[in-house]
Image 1 (cartoon, one colour):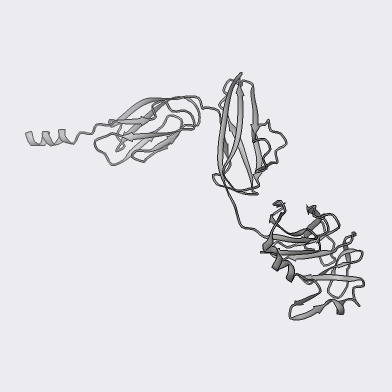
Image 2 (cartoon, helix red, strand yellow):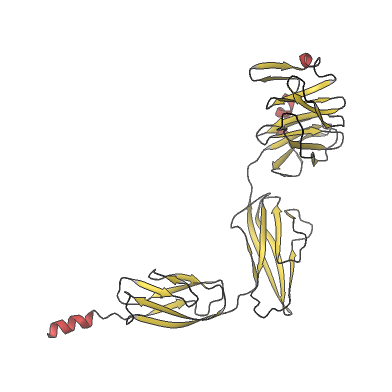
Length: 333
């Protein structure tokens, strides 16, 4: 009998826990450490509706307040411990809608302010003056959020936000690692040299000189092409397409430039539609991005390839740069 009582005493479970930090703020992870000397099942309730069955969980309170935290061991009401935790107001800050950043993708940064008493709040987003590493697409720099895209890779791209809450100003600065990414380039030649411009969807990098473009531009010509095993030559097509200067064939259509602009037609010459009414000294087609690029006197334009059988296009041409006198265009994948 004495031995049995001793064994029972040895198996008594003491339930206890601690948490860190002791004065957390809303939005800050709290680590709960299970200090119980036994048990196999744990049931935590955090006082705001949240629960966990992990032995020593982490938990984040979304709102400030005082909460009662309870740990129950092995499902027994007699094996419980309850402690009070006070969660304090958040420090005004801002958060991003992503954790990784690449050039020429949209990102939104949103202010995070706890304001239970509906005080007046003002926001002022700032980027460094005289810099070109980001383009803001938001209509205002004074809203609760800021949308932009980065135009160059950087190890530290800074963004500032001043939050004025009930007359008190919080200055916030965060820096972001912005990675480069692969994409197609369009190459251009005019009397001043050869240029490269990387294309990112509807956006494009700034044109810059590039000596590596020379070999590709030297090889560019639009006077002959093999399509579906058949050879097409400028001299043979001139009878079907008067004033023909150059052409590219894609998706059973011929895109061709003449003395009076840029056209698209079916290969037999049917359904001719004029894309450009200005003189077109150079053009190319990018089958990977499904686009046609062409030059006029003082800029380079593009649009998607035509998809309809009647060659009617539904999107207007867009300008990609203002290079003048472009004589050759090529795509580098």
